[in-house]
Image 1 (cartoon, rainbow, N blue to C red):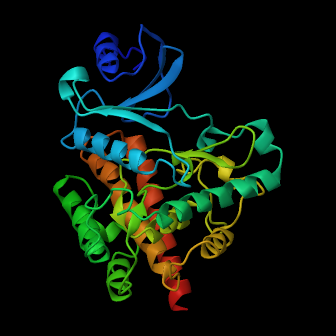
Image 2: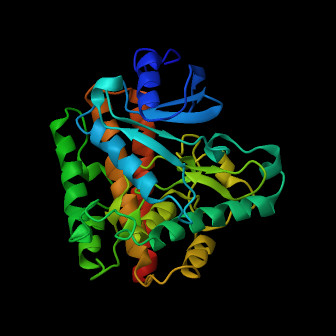
Length: 352
């Protein structure tokens, strides 16, 4: 949507900002930013200060407003921490202002590598190697934050977090049987192995912390003039759980040379460029910067593959029933098959 006026009424926003003491005068240079595939991101200037507004999509889902408020709470809690994140400015939980909850944050001076690399980064393998390590440092910093001391106690339910994972995602997959045309669980490699292995090898305990929940290349921004992270973005799945699952997510999403690459893979071809660290190098880098026990890290990689595959398969199931584009469904189903096969390889390496 190029025209944002239907979802962001600038006059109403202006009145609200004035009441909050956020500048004076008109809003200027308002423009939608790319990257808001579901939520809207509007950058604008008021009283010589730049802002970015984030709000839910035009057609709200059941949890759209609560998700927006959770994101704002996380960003506010992370202020002053070592975690690269968008600076929080203000939040509005009064849905009557813009028709939904929203918040304001500082603009990020950075780029999304999933959309391609600038010349500075593309020209130097050492820079790209450092980019991967910087991503690891982002989640080690996040996992090291004392969530209680920053006001996030009660933000999630860490008790029984690991125990809930497999039943939840098995149930998610089983729910797709209600969609006509979906070939069923038997079409997914490893369904007779992966859930049982996860249950049998689940870590007995973990140290709760803040986890991003969807940590991969497209959800971080890098500095234009260095290999460092400018910010971790898209915090809508953030919760209090086991931060090792963020590392598992990287293990599930990162390039694996054992796999044949496809043009429709979720991670872009930039990640395949010479110089980016291997999964093993990233795990080693994490291990040097954490006090967490990584003895069972393979379990988190398998869980991440299983969880992400279960989510992506939903689009394929809806496509089978005529409720989503067939091309998109087929591409995500292929990615699900890759993820489940990757999980099986991880199990083989762990058990071997």
